[in-house]
Length: 389
Figure 1 (cartoon, rainbow, N blue to C red):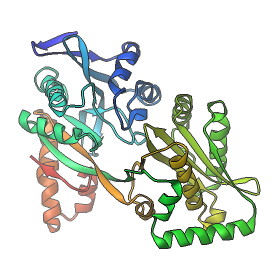
Figure 2 (cartoon, rainbow, N blue to C red):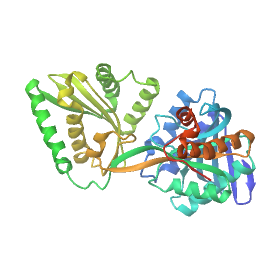
Figure 3 (cartoon, helix red, strand yellow):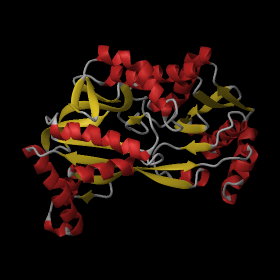
Figure 4 (cartoon, one colour):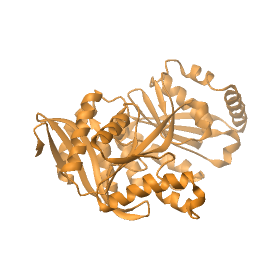
């Protein structure tokens, strides 16, 4: 335990053996969370670190108040060529493309307490552990106001930063009606087209919908999903060993739902959902392109969503990421997942700060100044909207 000042204590965890002792305390902090627990619980991080830590360094900060764990900053440290420009030492929240969100973990949901925890964390990174060039925090969810509090703390600490947009997240909340009422609430053209294509598909053969949620059959569901994926337009699944480990964990916890659409006993569409605390996270969807004219993905989505509403009693749908046009028809609300890059007062940190908070805005404002603006923007730009301080 390292004491930084009388107000708080910071414990730094840098090896897997010590990390493995944190399970009970870690899950105690997430116990009251409504959102994203499947992607913030101890087991999620344990599986992620098993597959992706590689040569990077574990750097988890635990904030203690009076010997009680109050907050966790789940970091790793990377040495990488940031945005293809300069090799820099980067601290980032643990996660990658498989993480719908990345976040700090707090015991208390009160914004004042969370602000105090974050002040502790960034004071430590500013005054005690200075061996870094940049910190990248993304994508932070907006549902619990953490992003706003982080941004405020960084401003008050005088740390140079930039905000940027990561991706859109289409969702629908306040679902307090039946599955049929949900379908009837979709746009008229969507409903009519769905009905027409389903009728045409029924003329091809017998339709059957199956929901897979039995933990003892999880490998069967996974293999069936890959059977459909193998026929689809998608590439073989990335990081398949990680995916299998997480899906087995989710099945064991009771979170996993697979949905399948069969025609004459042959699977033509498959979808995967994670359900926790009334929220259905829409993860993966694949279908056989030989049936494109029948929109099998939409047919399965409708039946699967009705099941989730009527049987699992979900109150919210979260599409995770992406601005595909069809998502607006099914989940008409959109929120922006955001990120923050923080620049240290090192030479590399200041060079990157200049490039990303001064040069990039100039390129966007006066693109004619740079013949290679598209290449430069591709290197520098981490999102669609940049704000520098």
